[in-house]
Length: 216
Ligand SMILES: CC(C)(COP(=O)(O)OP(=O)(O)OC[C@H]1O[C@@H](n2cnc3c(N)ncnc32)[C@H](O)[C@@H]1OP(=O)(O)O)[C@@H](O)C(=O)NCCC(=O)NCCS
Image 1 (tube, rainbow, N blue to C red):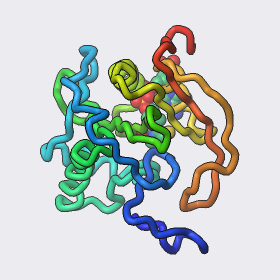
Image 2: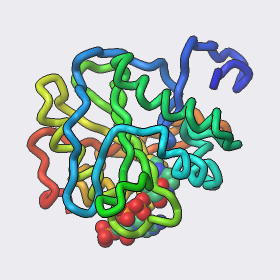
Image 3: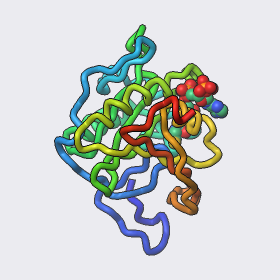
């Protein structure tokens, strides 16, 4: 989505992204820093690369009242738009922008959500985003997925800090983060540039030495 027209004085960046209520920023490319992991699983959820067989998940996500507004999930689903979404997720790895993985139910292999890592401007800092289909929420899937992905990402030599930006009303997301060892560093006022205007954001990082127990 171009930001041109979203407000006077805005710069029309060549490529923009919005992710999980994240800020609109230029993508940062750091090829080779985040490799594709071997599949990550705890027996309940399994994280893997996206497949063109996952269009059912993307179609369900496109009907969600929140997900398309804060992500690149198409708000009007078509097979073409779904395939383009999958190709965009692959592109995050090949371009060096980050990594996007499908959260799947370990038992069935069905994709039910998304987990993404995107480089921030500061070297060593990586943003985290995620969503879960409404039909699979409140089962601990997102927290489990973040708990699997975080130590793996923080084990990479060039990644020192993961961080998420969350609107203060988003209790589910706050609980996911705190359950996965992220700690609130404070409120960033008028930090998010959303279609609806500026919004505050809680800053939730997890560093290499932070453990999940200490955050609870
Ligand atoms: C936020 C979101 C990812 C949570 O996903 P989820 O799979 O339901 O989360 P989990 O099941 O892993 O829940 C983890 C904890 O949060 C709690 N929780 C989940 N949703 C909650 C809510 N709406 N209100 C209060 N607590 C909630 C769970 O009960 C669980 O609690 P526990 O740690 O005591 O067991 C999901 O609601 C979503 O996709 N929302 C739309 C997109 C979005 O907001 N993404 C994040 C942007 S920052």
